[in-house]
Length: 336
Image (tube, rainbow, N blue to C red; front, side, top):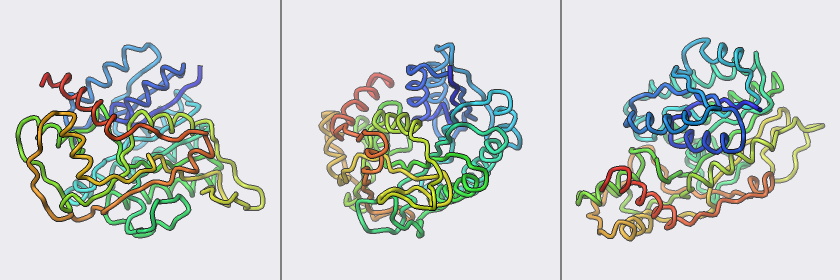
């Protein structure tokens, strides 16, 4: 039985990924600090469901604490590492930037140091579509320049891409960075728009609609995202001979490292997303139209051709179906 270490295992994506890995017959070690950035009860509930499987074990530590990950890797020697733990949220990074430095930069450094000492077959680290920053060429392609991040959150995630590349080059660590696009679905984070909008609409409260609803996002359903991650585990990058990289591949010419978009390949306007929530809830939203917030990008849109080339897979869940599934979960979980 192969072992996978998942950081951020009690998080939204971490929970779904661990569940998938357990179903596929892996032994899974999850590490999560269960921080209070959002409802800890939701994290506990996710983790308790994972613990019902005998092949899942949970570690409650902060990854940025020195030697925590080194000791864990020395003891467990995982075959794969999937790094999801991070301080998330564009807007919160304006209020509390230090928490992003600690979790995202220091936490990733501790992981890279541990992996250097006890190398896995493949490391996969989460990045974000926010790394594309001020880039206006769409859809976003992995080979596009991504030099002008608009938030400190995005800057820390782009920094982790560079950090991981240096370790891949220096120590031959096979590494895949995957850039998420707006991920949604049942068990989602309460700070995300779908959760906040659904809660407000069902309560009859107004919702804040930024950029007057003219934001566009590539909404990616959680199970589609996890399928992409799972398949990328088997697409282990190799340092190219003579530095020659196939056209359209983001593979580094000097390291076994690449970055891959996982998105739905469709950019949907926020107003259409809200319409779908109204349809799923059977209630109309009271919309408080507001200007775009500092640090936000007006649009995201993924080119997922590289993911398909590497895995044969392309995310496919329609936005309205995904929203309907979330609203059904929300009503059941909160007994609305």
